[in-house]
Image (cartoon, rainbow, N blue to C red; front, side, top):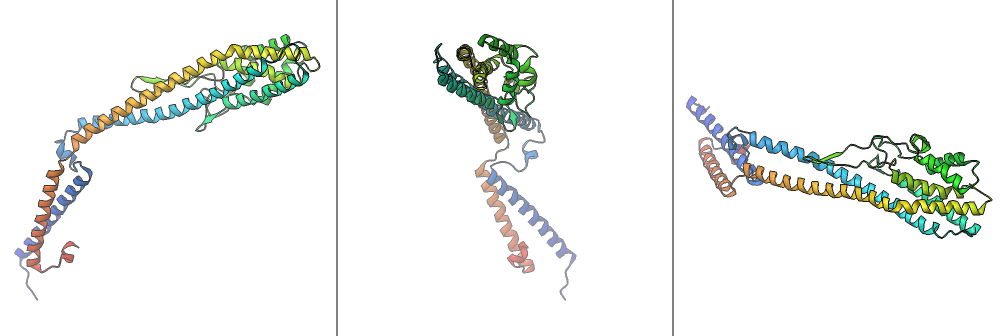
Length: 336
């Protein structure tokens, strides 16, 4: 049996400690080589993390702005597309309604009324559009439709105008239904919240307003004009061709007057879109600047790191040679 002295054991222990230290240093330097940043942040900053903490906090805030901005951008785009459908349907309806003259035929009146009825349904559908499970024009009540179904509103309007025998009388009742506060539209047509969406924080001291709801006067007027024409398709004033034609003309006049206001409403959403895009670009620029500052704060010199790593590897090779002579260990045993 070989006798192992206390001195031998002490040397072995020291060598093992040296081996562990060199390996840890090699691993750290290897990590720094791959990331380009120091693995010893505390040492680099001399224990003062205030600047780094400030950068990280700012980056977190900017990340939240980016998330909110992206969501707002998608929401605003959805609103713009929906209002585009509303305006397109309105413009097409006007082009057909303006062709209705005092001596329009029953076929012309019937076909036009049917077409307007379909456009009314399309506009109602557009106003009930959801993006990511959130209704666009329902204010704070984003979990349900903004307005009642087209058929439901038509049924309410037919009941309201029952007994009217002139186009003027029908228009008066329909106007009251849509325009009067707490009237038919507000109580059974509009299903959203009276409170609009709150402004969305998209940057420092910047908030985007996407507060358009289906209670907006422009939207109400659009629905009113289309509803006047759609009622003819529902049989209102049936048997009186002249009054039906007059009602379609009233519908056309209402829609003509609201066209420019639709453009203004879309411009409002467009301004919000531009504001969001600008904020997102500014936030991206600030993130890049902060990340560059953080990188410079923690970066390591690749040449110095590579030189240090080579030196540590050389020390490990020397240590292995010494250990191998002392204990005749194989490289496999040494590294195990």
